[in-house]
Image 1 (cartoon, rainbow, N blue to C red):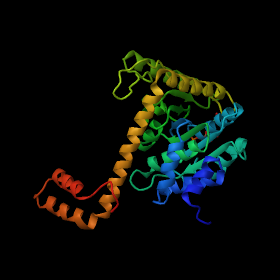
Image 2 (image 1 turned 180 degrees about the horizontal axis):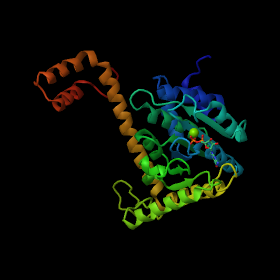
Image 3 (image 1 turned 60 degrees about the horizontal axis):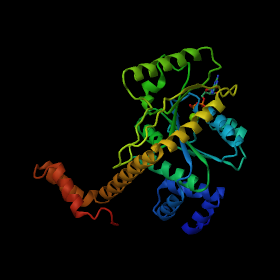
Image 4 (image 1 turned 120 degrees about the vertical axis):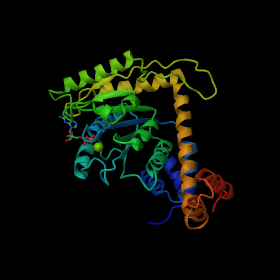
Length: 339
Ligand SMILES: Nc1nc2c(ncn2[C@@H]2O[C@H](COP(=O)(O)OP(=O)(O)O)[C@@H](O)[C@H]2O)c(=O)[nH]1
Ligand SMILES: [Mg+2]
Protein backbone atom coordinates (compact mmCIF):
# COMPACT_ATOMS: atom_id res chain seq x y z
CA UNK A 1 0.00 0.00 0.00
CA UNK A 2 1.24 3.46 -0.82
CA UNK A 3 2.09 5.71 2.06
CA UNK A 4 -0.51 8.41 2.61
CA UNK A 5 0.95 11.59 4.14
CA UNK A 6 -0.36 12.52 7.56
CA UNK A 7 -2.23 15.69 6.61
CA UNK A 8 -4.07 13.95 3.80
CA UNK A 9 -4.87 10.98 6.02
CA UNK A 10 -6.26 13.23 8.75
CA UNK A 11 -8.42 15.11 6.25
CA UNK A 12 -9.90 11.82 5.05
CA UNK A 13 -10.45 10.61 8.60
CA UNK A 14 -12.37 13.80 9.38
CA UNK A 15 -14.55 13.11 6.32
CA UNK A 16 -15.34 9.72 7.81
CA UNK A 17 -13.50 7.72 5.15
CA UNK A 18 -13.47 4.17 6.53
CA UNK A 19 -10.22 3.13 4.83
CA UNK A 20 -8.42 6.18 6.20
CA UNK A 21 -9.85 5.51 9.65
CA UNK A 22 -8.62 1.92 9.56
CA UNK A 23 -5.21 3.02 8.36
CA UNK A 24 -4.71 5.66 11.04
CA UNK A 25 -6.01 3.25 13.68
CA UNK A 26 -3.33 0.78 12.59
CA UNK A 27 -0.68 3.48 12.88
CA UNK A 28 -1.98 4.43 16.34
CA UNK A 29 -1.85 0.81 17.40
CA UNK A 30 1.69 0.24 16.21
CA UNK A 31 2.83 3.45 17.89
CA UNK A 32 5.05 4.41 14.96
CA UNK A 33 6.65 7.85 15.18
CA UNK A 34 5.22 8.94 11.82
CA UNK A 35 1.74 8.58 13.31
CA UNK A 36 2.44 11.09 16.05
CA UNK A 37 1.63 14.27 14.12
CA UNK A 38 -1.54 12.85 12.62
CA UNK A 39 -2.73 11.62 16.02
CA UNK A 40 -1.96 14.95 17.65
CA UNK A 41 -3.95 16.61 14.89
CA UNK A 42 -6.86 14.19 15.19
CA UNK A 43 -6.98 14.68 18.93
CA UNK A 44 -7.86 18.34 18.48
CA UNK A 45 -10.87 17.33 16.39
CA UNK A 46 -12.10 14.70 18.84
CA UNK A 47 -14.20 15.22 21.95
CA UNK A 48 -17.75 14.93 20.70
CA UNK A 49 -18.33 11.19 21.04
CA UNK A 50 -19.93 9.48 24.00
CA UNK A 51 -17.35 6.91 25.06
CA UNK A 52 -18.93 3.83 26.58
CA UNK A 53 -16.83 1.13 28.22
CA UNK A 54 -18.25 -2.38 28.40
CA UNK A 55 -16.39 -4.83 30.59
CA UNK A 56 -16.90 -8.17 32.28
CA UNK A 57 -15.24 -11.56 32.54
CA UNK A 58 -14.71 -13.67 29.41
CA UNK A 59 -17.89 -15.42 28.35
CA UNK A 60 -20.20 -12.99 30.13
CA UNK A 61 -21.79 -12.05 26.81
CA UNK A 62 -20.12 -8.71 26.13
CA UNK A 63 -19.58 -9.09 22.40
CA UNK A 64 -23.10 -10.37 21.85
CA UNK A 65 -24.52 -7.53 23.92
CA UNK A 66 -22.39 -4.92 22.14
CA UNK A 67 -23.76 -6.15 18.81
CA UNK A 68 -27.36 -5.89 20.03
CA UNK A 69 -26.68 -2.50 21.58
CA UNK A 70 -25.08 -1.29 18.36
CA UNK A 71 -28.20 -2.23 16.42
CA UNK A 72 -30.32 -0.35 18.98
CA UNK A 73 -28.13 2.77 18.74
CA UNK A 74 -28.28 2.61 14.94
CA UNK A 75 -32.08 2.65 15.13
CA UNK A 76 -31.78 6.10 16.75
CA UNK A 77 -29.73 7.27 13.75
CA UNK A 78 -26.44 7.56 15.57
CA UNK A 79 -23.18 6.15 14.25
CA UNK A 80 -21.33 3.61 16.37
CA UNK A 81 -17.70 2.54 16.52
CA UNK A 82 -16.53 -0.44 18.54
CA UNK A 83 -13.04 -1.01 19.84
CA UNK A 84 -12.83 -4.60 21.06
CA UNK A 85 -9.82 -5.40 23.19
CA UNK A 86 -9.33 -9.04 24.02
CA UNK A 87 -5.88 -10.21 25.02
CA UNK A 88 -6.91 -13.84 24.72
CA UNK A 89 -7.05 -13.70 20.97
CA UNK A 90 -5.53 -11.79 18.10
CA UNK A 91 -9.11 -11.27 17.00
CA UNK A 92 -11.71 -10.30 19.53
CA UNK A 93 -14.19 -12.67 21.03
CA UNK A 94 -12.00 -15.74 21.07
CA UNK A 95 -13.68 -17.01 17.95
CA UNK A 96 -13.23 -15.13 14.71
CA UNK A 97 -16.10 -16.85 13.04
CA UNK A 98 -18.33 -16.43 16.07
CA UNK A 99 -17.68 -12.72 16.19
CA UNK A 100 -18.36 -12.32 12.52
CA UNK A 101 -21.65 -14.13 12.81
CA UNK A 102 -22.64 -12.04 15.77
CA UNK A 103 -21.70 -8.80 14.06
CA UNK A 104 -23.75 -10.02 11.11
CA UNK A 105 -26.74 -7.99 12.20
CA UNK A 106 -24.88 -4.74 11.68
CA UNK A 107 -22.23 -5.92 9.21
CA UNK A 108 -21.93 -3.85 6.07
CA UNK A 109 -23.58 -0.86 7.72
CA UNK A 110 -21.35 2.18 7.00
CA UNK A 111 -22.58 3.72 10.26
CA UNK A 112 -20.82 0.96 12.19
CA UNK A 113 -17.08 0.49 12.48
CA UNK A 114 -15.47 -2.38 14.37
CA UNK A 115 -11.85 -2.46 15.38
CA UNK A 116 -10.32 -5.39 17.21
CA UNK A 117 -7.13 -4.92 19.15
CA UNK A 118 -5.20 -7.99 20.12
CA UNK A 119 -3.31 -7.29 23.24
CA UNK A 120 -1.08 -4.80 24.90
CA UNK A 121 2.12 -3.76 23.24
CA UNK A 122 5.28 -3.57 25.26
CA UNK A 123 4.92 -1.82 28.59
CA UNK A 124 1.37 -0.65 28.82
CA UNK A 125 0.96 0.14 25.16
CA UNK A 126 -2.56 -1.18 25.24
CA UNK A 127 -4.22 1.71 26.99
CA UNK A 128 -2.43 4.38 25.04
CA UNK A 129 -2.89 2.82 21.61
CA UNK A 130 -6.50 1.99 22.35
CA UNK A 131 -7.36 5.51 23.44
CA UNK A 132 -5.71 6.99 20.38
CA UNK A 133 -7.80 4.67 18.24
CA UNK A 134 -10.81 6.05 20.14
CA UNK A 135 -9.65 9.59 19.27
CA UNK A 136 -9.53 8.63 15.60
CA UNK A 137 -13.08 7.24 15.70
CA UNK A 138 -14.34 10.19 17.71
CA UNK A 139 -12.83 12.70 15.27
CA UNK A 140 -14.24 10.69 12.35
CA UNK A 141 -17.73 11.52 13.57
CA UNK A 142 -18.91 8.38 15.34
CA UNK A 143 -21.45 9.49 17.92
CA UNK A 144 -20.85 6.59 20.27
CA UNK A 145 -17.55 4.78 20.70
CA UNK A 146 -17.87 1.51 22.60
CA UNK A 147 -14.73 0.04 24.15
CA UNK A 148 -15.17 -3.64 24.94
CA UNK A 149 -12.55 -4.89 27.38
CA UNK A 150 -12.11 -8.10 29.30
CA UNK A 151 -12.45 -7.20 32.95
CA UNK A 152 -9.76 -9.33 34.47
CA UNK A 153 -6.88 -7.02 35.20
CA UNK A 154 -5.75 -3.49 35.87
CA UNK A 155 -5.18 -2.63 32.23
CA UNK A 156 -8.77 -3.37 31.44
CA UNK A 157 -9.94 -1.33 34.40
CA UNK A 158 -7.76 1.55 33.19
CA UNK A 159 -9.30 1.42 29.75
CA UNK A 160 -12.79 1.25 31.22
CA UNK A 161 -11.95 4.31 33.32
CA UNK A 162 -11.20 6.18 30.13
CA UNK A 163 -14.89 5.91 29.27
CA UNK A 164 -17.59 8.40 30.20
CA UNK A 165 -20.01 5.60 30.97
CA UNK A 166 -18.95 2.14 32.10
CA UNK A 167 -21.21 -0.89 31.85
CA UNK A 168 -20.16 -3.98 33.80
CA UNK A 169 -21.62 -7.20 32.43
CA UNK A 170 -22.28 -10.17 34.71
CA UNK A 171 -23.87 -13.43 33.66
CA UNK A 172 -25.40 -16.48 35.28
CA UNK A 173 -23.55 -19.77 35.09
CA UNK A 174 -20.04 -18.43 35.46
CA UNK A 175 -19.59 -19.25 39.14
CA UNK A 176 -21.45 -18.36 42.32
CA UNK A 177 -19.89 -14.99 42.98
CA UNK A 178 -20.76 -11.87 41.11
CA UNK A 179 -17.95 -11.84 38.62
CA UNK A 180 -17.44 -8.11 38.90
CA UNK A 181 -16.45 -8.55 42.53
CA UNK A 182 -14.01 -11.29 41.71
CA UNK A 183 -12.45 -9.10 39.07
CA UNK A 184 -12.53 -6.09 41.41
CA UNK A 185 -14.49 -3.97 38.97
CA UNK A 186 -17.79 -3.56 40.82
CA UNK A 187 -17.05 0.01 41.83
CA UNK A 188 -16.30 1.20 38.32
CA UNK A 189 -19.81 0.37 37.07
CA UNK A 190 -22.15 3.20 36.15
CA UNK A 191 -24.57 0.59 34.89
CA UNK A 192 -24.80 -3.13 35.60
CA UNK A 193 -26.03 -5.47 32.91
CA UNK A 194 -26.89 -9.04 33.82
CA UNK A 195 -26.82 -10.83 30.51
CA UNK A 196 -28.39 -14.14 29.45
CA UNK A 197 -31.56 -13.41 31.42
CA UNK A 198 -33.28 -16.02 29.25
CA UNK A 199 -31.55 -18.55 31.50
CA UNK A 200 -33.47 -19.72 34.57
CA UNK A 201 -30.52 -19.10 36.90
CA UNK A 202 -30.33 -15.41 35.90
CA UNK A 203 -32.74 -14.34 38.65
CA UNK A 204 -30.30 -15.42 41.30
CA UNK A 205 -27.45 -13.50 39.70
CA UNK A 206 -29.64 -10.39 39.55
CA UNK A 207 -30.74 -10.80 43.18
CA UNK A 208 -27.15 -11.36 44.34
CA UNK A 209 -25.94 -8.30 42.54
CA UNK A 210 -28.74 -6.11 43.88
CA UNK A 211 -28.02 -7.33 47.43
CA UNK A 212 -24.39 -6.60 47.01
CA UNK A 213 -25.10 -3.06 45.79
CA UNK A 214 -27.61 -2.44 48.60
CA UNK A 215 -25.06 -3.61 51.15
CA UNK A 216 -22.43 -1.36 49.63
CA UNK A 217 -24.77 1.63 49.84
CA UNK A 218 -25.76 0.67 53.41
CA UNK A 219 -22.11 0.50 54.40
CA UNK A 220 -21.66 4.04 53.13
CA UNK A 221 -19.71 3.08 50.06
CA UNK A 222 -20.76 5.53 47.45
CA UNK A 223 -20.92 3.16 44.55
CA UNK A 224 -21.62 5.18 41.47
CA UNK A 225 -22.68 8.23 43.42
CA UNK A 226 -19.93 10.64 42.67
CA UNK A 227 -19.33 14.22 43.54
CA UNK A 228 -18.28 16.61 40.88
CA UNK A 229 -14.60 17.22 41.21
CA UNK A 230 -13.54 19.89 38.80
CA UNK A 231 -9.90 20.53 39.54
CA UNK A 232 -9.51 23.65 41.62
CA UNK A 233 -13.22 24.35 41.87
CA UNK A 234 -15.70 23.59 44.59
CA UNK A 235 -18.27 21.00 43.49
CA UNK A 236 -21.33 22.87 42.28
CA UNK A 237 -23.95 20.26 41.74
CA UNK A 238 -23.87 16.64 42.73
CA UNK A 239 -24.30 13.81 40.31
CA UNK A 240 -26.93 11.61 41.92
CA UNK A 241 -26.65 8.33 40.17
CA UNK A 242 -27.38 4.88 41.49
CA UNK A 243 -26.06 2.32 39.04
CA UNK A 244 -29.12 0.51 37.73
CA UNK A 245 -29.15 -3.26 37.29
CA UNK A 246 -30.52 -4.19 33.90
CA UNK A 247 -31.38 -7.72 32.85
CA UNK A 248 -30.60 -8.35 29.23
CA UNK A 249 -30.91 -11.22 26.82
CA UNK A 250 -29.13 -10.70 23.56
CA UNK A 251 -30.76 -13.90 22.40
CA UNK A 252 -34.30 -12.63 22.95
CA UNK A 253 -33.44 -8.96 22.57
CA UNK A 254 -34.73 -8.23 26.08
CA UNK A 255 -33.38 -5.28 28.01
CA UNK A 256 -31.26 -3.90 25.20
CA UNK A 257 -33.38 -0.77 24.64
CA UNK A 258 -33.52 -0.32 28.41
CA UNK A 259 -29.73 -0.53 28.53
CA UNK A 260 -29.45 2.12 25.84
CA UNK A 261 -31.89 4.34 27.72
CA UNK A 262 -29.76 3.99 30.86
CA UNK A 263 -26.59 4.79 28.90
CA UNK A 264 -28.21 7.91 27.43
CA UNK A 265 -29.63 8.96 30.80
CA UNK A 266 -26.23 8.55 32.38
CA UNK A 267 -24.62 10.77 29.75
CA UNK A 268 -27.30 13.43 30.28
CA UNK A 269 -26.77 13.24 34.04
CA UNK A 270 -23.02 13.64 33.57
CA UNK A 271 -23.55 16.68 31.40
CA UNK A 272 -26.16 18.34 33.58
CA UNK A 273 -24.20 17.91 36.79
CA UNK A 274 -20.87 19.11 35.43
CA UNK A 275 -19.43 15.66 36.10
CA UNK A 276 -18.71 15.15 32.40
CA UNK A 277 -16.11 17.93 32.51
CA UNK A 278 -14.67 16.44 35.69
CA UNK A 279 -14.37 13.03 34.06
CA UNK A 280 -12.79 14.54 30.98
CA UNK A 281 -10.24 16.24 33.21
CA UNK A 282 -9.48 12.96 34.98
CA UNK A 283 -9.12 11.15 31.68
CA UNK A 284 -6.79 13.89 30.43
CA UNK A 285 -4.67 13.60 33.56
CA UNK A 286 -4.35 9.81 33.27
CA UNK A 287 -3.51 10.00 29.61
CA UNK A 288 -0.89 12.67 30.11
CA UNK A 289 0.72 10.69 32.91
CA UNK A 290 0.66 7.52 30.82
CA UNK A 291 2.25 9.39 27.91
CA UNK A 292 4.95 10.77 30.19
CA UNK A 293 5.71 7.28 31.51
CA UNK A 294 5.85 6.02 27.97
CA UNK A 295 8.32 8.69 26.87
CA UNK A 296 10.42 8.02 29.94
CA UNK A 297 10.54 4.27 29.36
CA UNK A 298 11.56 4.81 25.77
CA UNK A 299 14.38 7.15 26.77
CA UNK A 300 15.44 4.77 29.51
CA UNK A 301 15.64 1.93 26.98
CA UNK A 302 17.66 4.10 24.58
CA UNK A 303 20.32 4.69 27.21
CA UNK A 304 20.22 1.24 28.80
CA UNK A 305 23.72 0.28 27.62
CA UNK A 306 25.20 3.69 28.29
CA UNK A 307 24.40 6.08 31.07
CA UNK A 308 21.77 3.80 32.60
CA UNK A 309 24.27 0.92 32.83
CA UNK A 310 26.80 3.23 34.48
CA UNK A 311 24.31 4.40 37.06
CA UNK A 312 23.13 0.83 37.71
CA UNK A 313 26.74 -0.10 38.41
CA UNK A 314 27.00 2.78 40.86
CA UNK A 315 23.78 1.66 42.58
CA UNK A 316 25.10 -1.91 42.92
CA UNK A 317 28.32 -0.53 44.41
CA UNK A 318 26.14 1.44 46.85
CA UNK A 319 27.73 4.65 45.71
CA UNK A 320 24.36 6.15 44.88
CA UNK A 321 20.76 5.30 45.82
CA UNK A 322 18.21 4.34 43.13
CA UNK A 323 16.35 7.57 43.83
CA UNK A 324 19.44 9.74 43.54
CA UNK A 325 20.48 7.90 40.37
CA UNK A 326 17.05 8.45 38.83
CA UNK A 327 17.17 12.14 39.67
CA UNK A 328 20.61 12.39 38.12
CA UNK A 329 19.47 10.54 34.99
CA UNK A 330 16.45 12.81 34.53
CA UNK A 331 18.66 15.86 34.95
CA UNK A 332 21.10 14.60 32.34
CA UNK A 333 18.62 13.46 29.72
CA UNK A 334 16.58 16.10 28.05
CA UNK A 335 13.56 13.89 28.63
CA UNK A 336 10.99 15.76 26.60
CA UNK A 337 13.31 16.33 23.66
CA UNK A 338 14.49 13.87 21.06
CA UNK A 339 17.42 11.59 21.75
N1 LIG B 1 -28.42 -17.94 26.64
C1 LIG B 1 -27.74 -16.87 26.25
N2 LIG B 1 -26.47 -17.00 25.85
C2 LIG B 1 -25.79 -15.90 25.48
C3 LIG B 1 -26.39 -14.61 25.51
N3 LIG B 1 -25.47 -13.71 25.12
C4 LIG B 1 -24.34 -14.40 24.86
N4 LIG B 1 -24.52 -15.72 25.07
C5 LIG B 1 -23.55 -16.78 24.88
O1 LIG B 1 -22.48 -16.65 25.79
C6 LIG B 1 -21.23 -16.99 25.18
C7 LIG B 1 -20.23 -15.86 25.34
O2 LIG B 1 -20.70 -14.73 24.63
P1 LIG B 1 -19.73 -13.56 24.17
O3 LIG B 1 -20.61 -12.46 23.68
O4 LIG B 1 -18.69 -14.06 23.24
O5 LIG B 1 -19.05 -13.17 25.55
P2 LIG B 1 -17.76 -12.26 25.84
O6 LIG B 1 -16.60 -13.18 26.00
O7 LIG B 1 -18.08 -11.59 27.13
O8 LIG B 1 -17.61 -11.29 24.71
C8 LIG B 1 -21.55 -17.33 23.74
O9 LIG B 1 -21.63 -18.71 23.60
C9 LIG B 1 -22.89 -16.66 23.51
O10 LIG B 1 -23.65 -17.33 22.53
C10 LIG B 1 -27.75 -14.51 25.92
O11 LIG B 1 -28.36 -13.43 25.96
N5 LIG B 1 -28.36 -15.67 26.28
MG1 LIG C 1 -15.93 -10.74 23.49
